[in-house]
Length: 207
Length: 316
Image: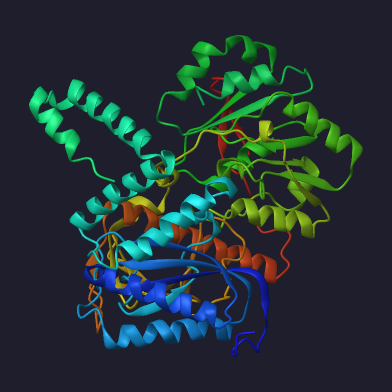
């Protein structure tokens, strides 16, 4: 039992957190979220699923959908406090948008945590849930080393492609065969690479 | 109407079912279209066409009250022009009213279509008893909820229509919802002052030199510091903002005080107009309920109409 779980207890419950934080530093926050949630889970917090989303709705935020076997408000406040330490020590440093062009309300202030701004509809149904969970774990770990900018997202897509291919073709020879097929399609329909360059490109396929 | 009427007529062939079509000063050639395409139905009496030429804007409550008063059946149903009845809907309604007493059928609460919320079937006697739709309502929103509340006060148990084939309708954008309403052309400009992430102040500058202003609260986010708070939007669709305090009115120019107002975008303007009329209507609905008002109009559905393209005026 987590030491703070002493008030009203909800069982089998989703908690939806939005952490408003400047996008330029999302990669720092993602790493902290990963570490803090893992640490709290080891300390006894009954999180059994966690999903991560990146959102720009009403201001840039990292959204966490956390499923608890059981949870109290104190548990949520404990997560807030742990993440709040990081937010206080590493504030966004820029003000949130105070005059939105297309909304009746200002964006949420940076460095604040809010609840229930999204809901269960974001959780994919049973069959796709493991994929969504894998993507969430990837987001948490991948962006720790990469800023969440265009280049970072491009690298993430490459990384995901590699992960998918590795999962689809565990055998190295099969993987190379698949990649050869893809390269041939690209050569035929897109770039029409000269034969020599095509052969060179093949040599750079490394897994 | 061009899409729905002929389908609705075909789907309800029973001689016991009559369609009353009210042309509420429509400016889109509805009369000519009916005359050109529905002579057989007009001749048989299956379809009756009434023209009300005196409307300056579309009034949901008044137009429905007129149509209900003109209908001659014991059971009367509101089918909005964008609604399909669905095959056999009239027979279903007859079965319900033959097997049960003191009931009404409503599209409210149906899980399929917001555009079918306005479907209402009631005995004409009960409709008269509650004096129809409240004509104090202005613009889009809540008149359907209000009349069902008052029918309940009159002893009618409302049943939600749940058969999806009876709930088909052509979907609408907000633009169409506010088109032809009285309030929309009265508004010159709409401005917003941002207070925080959950609150803002809206200012409507009217063409007649007046203004109305109020602070609004986002009911979806106001409780967002609480992990287990639930959104309190009173269970009604289409309205997730609420007023903080009351509307204030005055004559332009207003004293801006500490407010910094910014003009809203065209899409926000539509939303703000819907918001104003819906909130106003919702307040009337709440007052009716709080005071247990069953009948609300001294007269209702009044006016002069013309039947089947004849020149003889009929005064309601």
